[in-house]
Picture 1 (cartoon, rainbow, N blue to C red):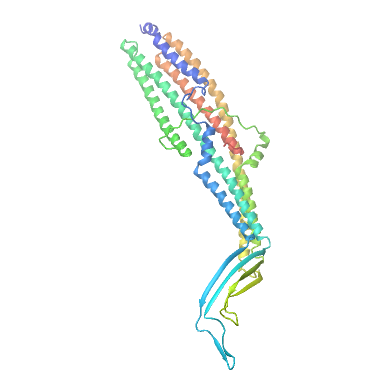
Picture 2 (tube, rainbow, N blue to C red):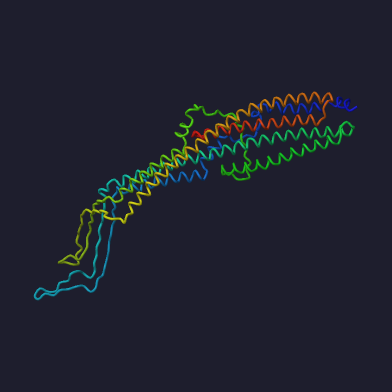
Length: 447
């Protein structure tokens, strides 16, 4: 009796089967129809906006501006220093001498005026200024590489956020489609139960499946909101914005011979280049420290006018001073010795830091490469799994039509198709993300 009713009720079943088949056909090429009308942000667009305005990038840029100012300040030692001084002083008592028949003589006036323009120019400092300029230029080079490193790290973080959004957006769509099919099937089973062709167990089992999918969708929705908030923070958007991103899952991997992959990474990674710049900087500091006890030779000149010259003490008389100044340090209390020791220690520490960085990069390169190959292999596996799930669903459809299996068996087959779709989606996203991670590990720019 039940088999006859099932065979006579094949139309609703066909509707259900066609619904699932449409989902499957649209998902085999999983990236072509998702978000077709609502896509707004590409990965390149997101990365460009993030690296152009994120606060940490702005801080790194200001560090470079600060370095430019320090370079200019170091060069000012080549420039003369000119100033104007003026003074007035009232003195009392003043010394007077009285000579018989000659009168009284005053050594200086009560009111003393003076004004002068003073000029000072460094003549020779044994290369100290030149070394200081080179030091500040090296500081700027470190700042420029640090800016590149900040952009690269920020871009990689953005890539991970972007692909999390891609997965969540598509996964929610898949769950929505699954819920629509389950609810339609529930209505069909409830009608069958009313005619005695289905049991309450079948109805309750279908409701449990609906509840499970709804719970999964709630979790996905919460994760989507969290990732959207993270992207809004990266872009500087208001948190009321709900950004939608495009599915960009086909990324070409870097093509580098395996025997030169590490040398390529060491040549391009910002961390290695920064360590090299820091080492040069430390060596310049060491050389500059050695120059601190060298003599300084400077030229000084002053021209002006003042009163107080005999015989007319109150007359404002022009005057000038010309001279050379020499400063020769004799003993600095051993300060230079310990400054040199400290500078040498910094150079040694940087050599160890460089070795640590290279070991870390080696690990990152091989780890990223392993994840990329694993994700690529999973794509093939899940493509096969999806084809198998499609075939199993087709067989379940035939068996359901003939009354060999129940609707629950058909739902299990359709659930397997949905899970295969999600697994294939995740493996493609993992592959795309791992390609970017490998590019970053090799030092290729991803912004």
